[in-house]
Image 1 (cartoon, rainbow, N blue to C red):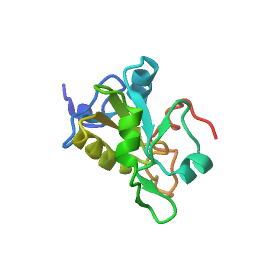
Image 2: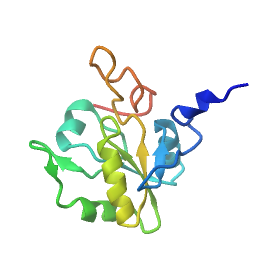
Image 3: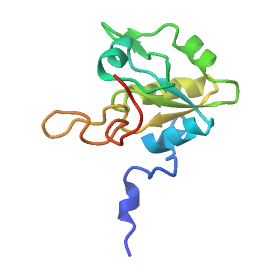
Image 4: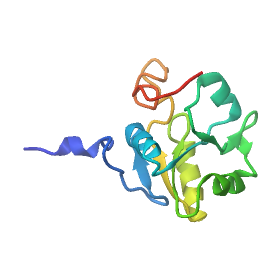
Length: 146
């Protein structure tokens, strides 16, 4: 019996270890932790993205970079510390899971147990260059609104 299928993304029930931060979690596990009060959901996308693309109810907006220009948010550290209680756990969401890795590494440097949400809000691009068809928060039918 082969176990090669276990090398893909983790199932909804487990976190996958990562370098420089606590780990990667599926959107389903992240939502479960948030509902159970075990983690704070931090949306690191820009205000424009949340406004135009959609947002997750209860997520705390702490942009990693700011639109336009995508300059670093100088208040990121302060906002993240304010959003996550001491000793608390954060799950970080971006568009596709790239900025949230960088943000999770920074959170770890600040002493916060931070997890990247795999696939982000919109998932990866498919063969047609479209998102929301391969993974991500919306693809999995988790709560969001426009």
